[in-house]
Amino acid sequence: MHVLFVEPKFPFNQRQFVRALHAVGARVTGIGEAPIEALDGELKSWLRGYEQVRTVVDEGALFEAVRRVQHREWVDRLEATVEAHILPAAKVREAAAIPGTSVRTAFLCRDKPAMKDALREAGVPCAQSRAVASGQELRMFAAEVGFPIILKPRAAAGAAGTQRVDNDRELESAIVAQGLDQGLSVAAEEFIEGHEGFYDTVAIGGRVVHEFVSHYYPNVLEAMRTRWISPQIVTTNRVDAPGYSEVRHLGQRVIQALDIGTSATHMEWFFGPKGLKFSEIGCRPPGVGVWDLYAAANDFDLYREWAMAIVHGHPGQAPSRRYSAGMINLRPSRDGRVAGYEGIDQIERMFGEWIIDSHLPPPGSPTAGVEGGYMVNAWIRMKHPDYDQLRRMLDTVGRTVKVLAA
Image (cartoon, rainbow, N blue to C red; front, side):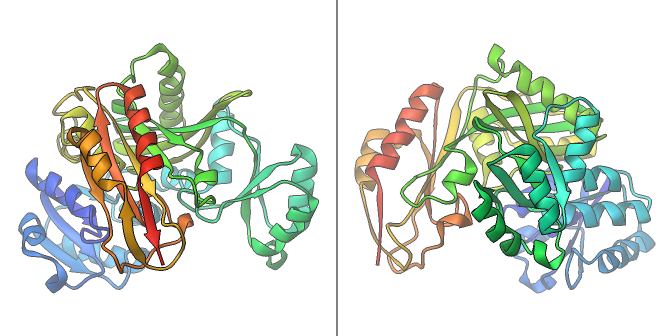
């Protein structure tokens, strides 16, 4: 099978998808923005060919690159794994008559209001939501739903650009901040109280063949706004527990409703007083290295499993479910430059056998704002056979390790 892969160089973990495709026997041609000279020897060794484009989100340029390859040889698949690349790749895929995720599916997984409308029609429980393009439309939505409400860019990933609005004063400020007074369109949603988690899959022909359940501590919006919190992402090895059956069933319904075929997916959900509510989906793997947690927790190569799905249409290995795994983001005491660390030696003595890896920028490194996500500053990843013990260990890390900045 000949697979075209969009942007093999950046971000860095993109190379793992190329490695895995090559490992399961695919011939891989990369399409990326960097010149071929910028690719290292190992990455080049996994590629059959390479096409450079100015930007991979330019559908015209991407289509021309695909056609150049098609004029030379047959192409079986065109794959993309970064959120911003999914819809352009789908449009080019259809224009070039290559099988894979459709434009409709990619659009519904990208545009939050359209996504929620389609899922509500399919009976999937979602927060009330609406696309709004003026201050008056937003005021009307707030009056119908009641505060608090959440505003999101229609096509953002994660919590980027997300804003909570609690009263009329904040509403008027948000109208300006979100560009609604200039006619921009955003997604307005009912605020759902409850715990936030996510359900990730690899699906083949619309059937889930690998699944993982993970939790945010605390919820993402709070984590990305509060410096003193050391937020955690934790994946459980208790996926088969009865309490998760509703989440798993919900995820399969979403895949069917959006006509997702063979693809990775990343689905967010809330559980609280109003029960289980679907939040949103990406037709792609999760970000912030979560697949590395799944691999460490399950004694297998998830990138290879994704490649097996794409190339051979069946999984290659079952997950062991031997460990739960998690990561904790360690925030600097202030913005500036890293001055040093406290507590690292103590944590290594206490939990060294359970540490997967860590990222501790050396003194002098610039810090990043807490809104930048889970991997922009220091972090530690750990695993343990018992989920509850892993949670206690991560909490201890958060209380013990200090990132000093000046």
